[in-house]
Image (cartoon, rainbow, N blue to C red):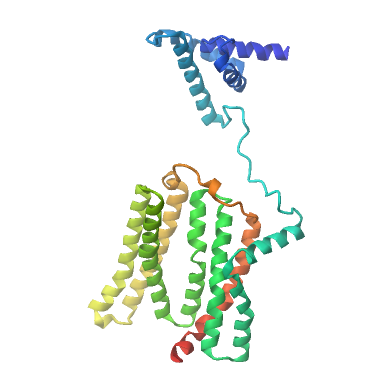
Length: 356
């Protein structure tokens, strides 16, 4: 009885679409559509589609009429898919990313594979052997020049591996959140060094590092994107709305940085006073609030603006052996190493500069 009921529902779907079951070209596809929708829903919509031939009498042949009705039928199913999230073709919903087959699933085996992936897949990693040398120089009281040198070099591969782990972690999120993770943790090394520099009273070092970061991102990174993108693509496109928002934020940041400098240059009597410091702190809090508002704008209210369009590049990306939680663990480990190396580096800056 159940099979007879299903067949009756399928025949009702064929009759509703105005297509006979022996229409072999579309028979299988119509069968999937008929199985995707309950029989009583077809009966409710039958009266709406029964008058369809009067609206398509301008088609020349019966074949065109059948194709037209099939398109209408498919459109109905697409609307139902949007409302209830099921697949028209009868496929399953997208599953979570499965682990690679060549990666061990036990804790010990995975830890070994994960560690090999971090330590032996970059040509810069040989500089990591200088970390014990930097510690020995610091503990033995070596000159600041040697401490600065052996602390700076290992930070380079750690920063590169930090970016690698961040990209791996971003692959488990959507493109917008992944870009935010790359932007945040990509600057983690610079933020740690700046923190220790501020703690040591090296304000000028922090100012110059910020200026260098702004100039490199505005000129070097953008210029390289234009140049190498132009070598591969004859015509490049960009997100106009996203670029407009970024330009507005950049203008606000420039004005916020320039305002205290203008006050310092035009009102010499206020040098070092509470008014100058208050303005500087106010702009800092303002920029932090604007950034938080921008994150809400980018990730929640206007998320569609920053979603990438066009073909996916998933085929060009190598599948990572890391998991989301292993990425978090490696971020913590690398942050610890970068922190104490940055502490050594900042403490040795003045002595190394004086010895040059």
